[in-house]
Length: 420
Image (tube, rainbow, N blue to C red; front, side, top):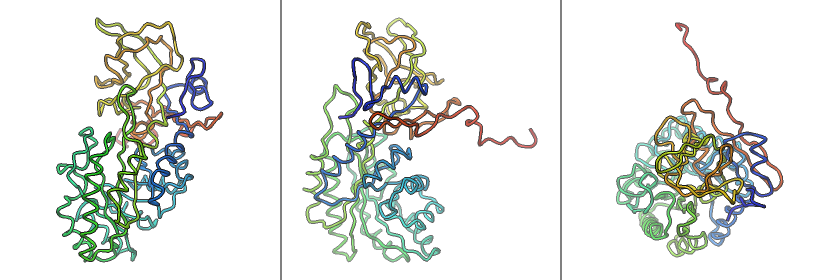
């Protein structure tokens, strides 16, 4: 459920007209519903309440400061994958003791920043990284809390580009090598080896891969304790999918996920950590765009819009599906086979291909649903196109949370050498 609904044929975000937002601010823009964000977070939290989890929102899904702050005010921590995301989390008011730092390529400066800010845990992914954290912590005369991310070699059954738990993945260390690496880590100075971490991928639509992975890491926790390691945290990552296509079956609901977690972590006696991202913010956002032109071809109509792959990369990168709906319903419009395409000078700048839609007119507004996750956070200025505006709605009010870039902004960081 989300809070984007029609009223007398016109799309609203909560109690605000999308058309009114467009008239005031132009297009394209992202629009986020506070009520949807909060609802999704609370449902996930309440499903797992009996486990007293630490929930760390995955900021990579949407790092807009207002989005992160909304969730932090609900009690969420943050899963960060860069020093920049740690900075955003802190600026949003996150408790450093609710921040975990993941990712395979942490730099020395990022490690130092994380240690000095007093984050809760590093999710480490290689022997070299563990040595680097130890060296920085020793230099700072601090202790760094670490977990080791293991790769359970589980097929997540998701898109190849967002699967992270198979043996060919760059993420984590093979689970069969874990015992040896924990022994090595325990011999290094200024480290507190406190946890095990796992994350097998994103947009999972069945529970079986989770169950298989969680059973393996739970066994690992017991093995580590037998070897004398004081394991107190178990980070189970994120990855639960959301419905993108209304014509397909829905992924498991959070309460079903929670029951599976309880079954496979029974008796583990750890602080459980979860890193939901898409699940919280995905359906809380839409991308609103205007139809620039219609171009008729032999077998379809090209609907050319003012949003491009630089604004929403997922269809070009993952061949992903987003429902595309009119902001104003045109009852008498003819249904046509169309391609919805953007203005970027790339053949892959396609949002929908050979899709049956009510044919819009030039100047009409369209909304791409389920765009709250990995939309704005993956946006770029390719083709020297300005980053899109982002707007948050709460009840009857809306606020611009990220301004649209100007042409001057595009060159603000550029410098011309003296010889030119």
